[in-house]
Length: 86
Image 1 (cartoon, rainbow, N blue to C red):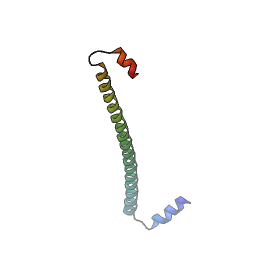
Image 2 (cartoon, rainbow, N blue to C red):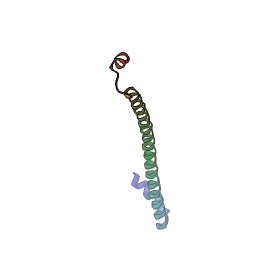
Image 3 (cartoon, helix red, strand yellow):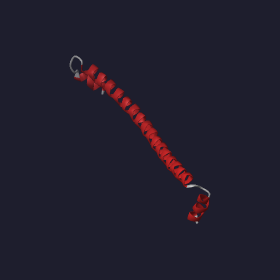
Image 4 (cartoon, rainbow, N blue to C red):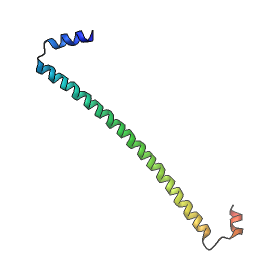
C-alpha cells in the first residue's frame, strides 16, 4: 500500500524533483539526529553541573572540618578538654 502511494506521488515528479525530495528527506533526518544529540548533550551538561555543585558542597564541608580539627589540635591535645566536648 505504502509503495503504491509512493509511486502515485512520484508520477508527476521529474528525476531531479525526486532526487531533490530524497536529499531534502535525508537532510531532515540528519537535522533531527543532530537535534537529538544536542538535547542529549544539554541533559548531560545539566547533570554534570548538578554533580559539580554537589562536589563543591562536599569540599566546603571537608575544608571546614579540617579547620575545626586543626583548631582542636593547636598546642597539643588536652584530653580533659576533648573528653568534655565529646
